[in-house]
Amino acid sequence: REIENVQNGFSGRIVAKMNALVDPQIISALYEASRAGVQIDLIIRGICCLRPGLLNLSHNIRVISIIGRFLEHSRIYYFYNNNQEEIYIGSADWMRRNLDRRVEVITPIKDQEIAKDLQEILGIMLADNRHAWELQPDGNYIQRCPGDNCPEANSQKTILSMALRTAGIN
Image (tube, rainbow, N blue to C red):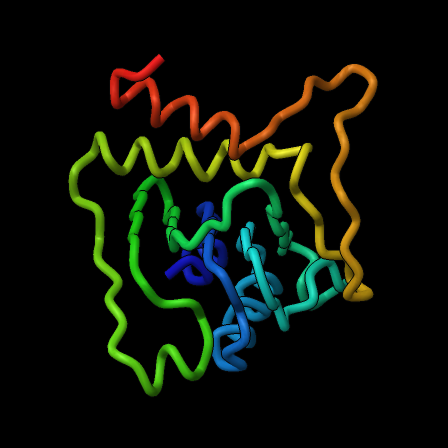
């Protein structure tokens, strides 16, 4: 859908957070979406076999890995299709073993408040400049650092504060 929307002059975006991206079919589909003009942000803590930032292949894909105090295992999938937003959570990484040989669950989030919270979490993670490492086209990672005029953005610290506030713990 995202490819079709972009080809018809509408906007399309994918943001996905998981532990690993290895499945060749999904990687090919992401490359196809990038070539079509879909903006793709991936937050992948572990192994990522996709190469972002390659001209005419993955130039619309950005991959970051957040390595900090907490070992994160959440999987969040966000799709934006011409002003229609869908968000899912689940147990599956995009790996052949998970998708082909395990029972995994991915479910849509219908509650708008929860969906809004998950979108906020994705935005906070994408803005991280303290523990985020950005995957380069050559396969190396470069750590993001706050700039001279840019305040530190520590996603794990921010999300922990949000959780404590929600729980009524200050």
